[in-house]
Image 1 (cartoon, rainbow, N blue to C red):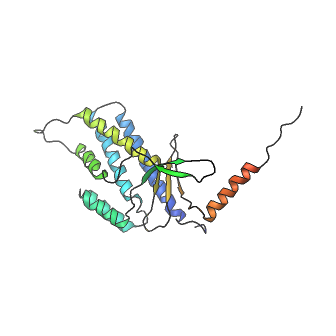
Image 2: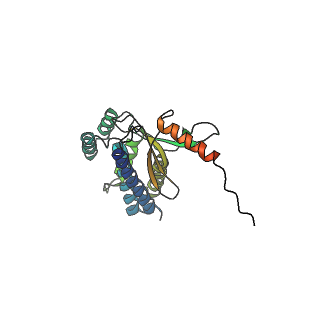
Length: 222
């Protein structure tokens, strides 16, 4: 760990691997959904997105194996409320906060919250909706409205990618924050959020000033 780092490099890399996995699964779900409302493909997408939600719930607990196992067991038993309570107890800030970087001349970069992302108070209902799509239906029950279900899953995939495209996450038992990003080309990255006034922030500001002050190379005269 660097002297001014609050999060060990191994923990950052652990979360990076999880974020990469989640992005691959969302893209796989989108591939399933692309042809339109078809039940087998819809079920494939539902499975991938349900796993993504489970990974989000457990991602901030990468440093606490015991809690991850408890939540995994609760979800396997379909005890969604229990899983949510376990996650909150282990880390009240377990759910990522979707945001967007905002720059103004002469001011530190701001991270502003954005709308349209899946929120912590809704993930359990969406998890339940996806789970329902994965079970064989009672032949005496009304038929599944495939187009309506397809539209819901497409919308949820959009909410998940909005959540993960640029977000802040606090790992359990850690003092620092991580910024997770997925760029327009699908490149995934995770960096530590550098506190204002820290040695890292001061050094970065100095580097930017030096680059602005550096003289430009003059073109050769003919």
